[in-house]
Image (cartoon, one colour):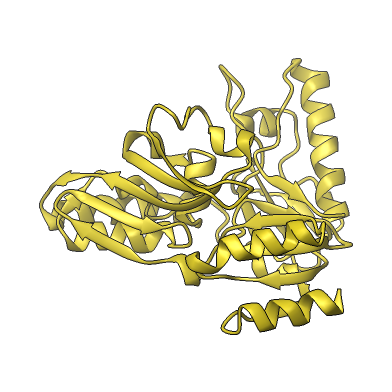
Length: 300
């Protein structure tokens, strides 16, 4: 491991390489053990990183803003690559906004608003990055990424770059081919339309107010914990099962919105996993509906 770190520093001198990095600092849940190696590269460093990790037979885990992520208490073995500020450029050309995978949705939505481009208001309050949003076809308030995406540039596991059309992305509910094929999003082109700035800002403010009113934003969480089952709402099923406020350690089903599991302070990944298992079992016993996790679980 020491030799690899020295090799990384020599080959990519501008790259900051961290060891035993606390992953709780890189997730909105504020939970997780340490990563053996943690890097946040620029786009031009990504292919070399993947090649070196492959050469050393080192496991690679790619994350974004960590807003839909639960990291195990024992951390993550191998290398964690964070697609973040080093890949966060935003360009506006006509009605198209092109954003690096590390750009936060809120920044991209605000850049679109500044340019008088509408259609992305739904995404302004989603606490994720473009890469994660594309990978899971993030959505809120009736809008989804598939409604606005034009094309996406990805990197394959062997370091080659390819561009996928909207059809090739195979976007569905919280799903894309990116997850299936182990691609890494590099950037995305988003098609929007002209709209008065005051209307865009008004809609964004309206949605932000709804979020503050209905979601437990005052606590760390990973957003919606479970996917929406067909014909149901996960939060309502959990509430109707009598699980509002249900708690395991410092992990709790939010009393404000039962679709969220919150960290009341010192929750562990084990607490969250046990709570999720209990919720799934009790909901299934009462309603015959199997809740599928929306939050991604990584590490040990």
